Amino acid sequence: METRQPQASPPTDAASVSLFLFRDGQEAYALGSAAVVEVITGSTVTPVPFTPDWMEGVISVRGKVLPVLDLFRYFQLPGDAPTQRSRLLLLAVEGNLFALWSDKILGVEDIAEAKFEVPMDTLTPLLRECMLAQLRHDDGLIFYLDLPKLLEKTRQQVLKK
Amino acid sequence: MTSPASAASQSPLLVFSAGGLPFAVEAAAIAQVAGGDWQPAANARLTQSIDLAALLGLPQGERKRTLVLPTPQGPCGFQVDSISRQEVSLKTWLPVPSLLADWAKPLVVIGFVLENEQVISVLNLADLMAHWADKTGRNHS
Image (tube, rainbow over all chains, first blue to last red; front, side, top):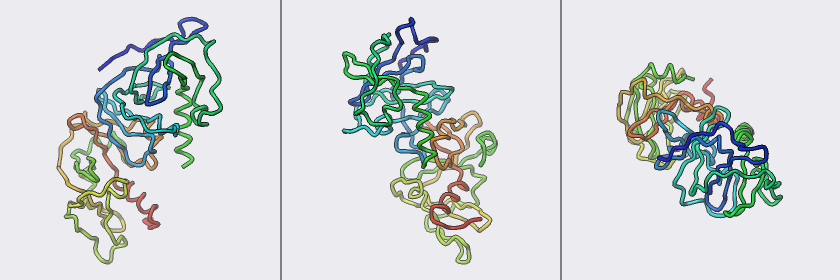
């Protein structure tokens, strides 16, 4: 199990933001590094009845049950579903603990805000709505996710149904 | 719906499998554990027992046992694959995360227990029956 200490304050200076970068299948994502509590491996995900297909199930981590959200399914991304997922990112967002799959951790980097770009029009609408920005990086285009917005959108989707 | 806290005071649980997945229910909520071919009496308002795996959208299992739930309209059966009786201590009960409660519609899970690191959903069969009644257009009010 890989354990990270959450950082109290993501920005290291006024013009940059500390981001946790990871890959899930063909897509690369960035999260505010303060949201990432821990990275774990080897958890068994148990499905839960009557949840959307993007809610893969739950895992148990030290006496807590955490739901696992599948970004590929949630954003309805094109192409084949990721098959090499090996790590779960445990996230804390507005008092909620949940997990996202990753097949590769790219690291934590301080990214200058000047590198943030407006998300491309060609991205799926839901992905665009849940992004703060896109970044061009050595690992390709990276989607910087707005996690509170992501959770808000998931709740709205379930209520609509 | 039973809260996790009150459910925790009502051990033991019946742990069973349906559609290849393990689940649990409060034993106190079950009137009878019968065979897979159990059927309600002919004059009951419910005319068939419910395949739990099918209701949950899971692959069909062996349906060798039936959990019989008492209801005001008479007994209602849930067909499951196999059953094991198990005592669960209070400390092993884990509450439903609020985020999961937001995502699950209907929410038929009242908590979780752990068995060999496997998370097992504790189901509220009364809520499941209400969902089945809504889905099939049967009035249970």
